[in-house]
Length: 70
Image (cartoon, rainbow, N blue to C red; front, top):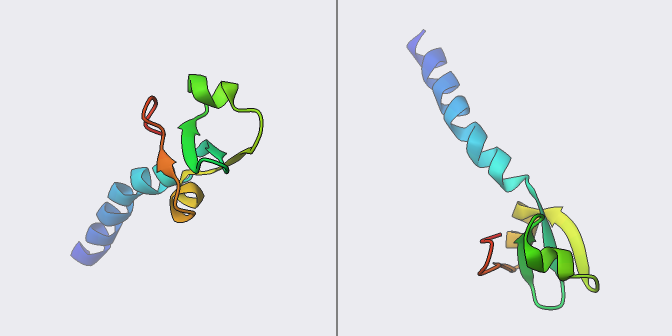
């Protein structure tokens, strides 16, 4: 019983981390900077910008925006 509770507790604690990595961000593929979708710079980005998950942006070597933090 304790093992089951321990595993469930670990799963519940890990869910917010998994959800944060699957959020959609705007990645500027030219500058390799990712923005929150509500960021002013994401709205101004028209060329070289794609919507990807935050995890994919990090894996591709992009850094977060200094304004919104990605």
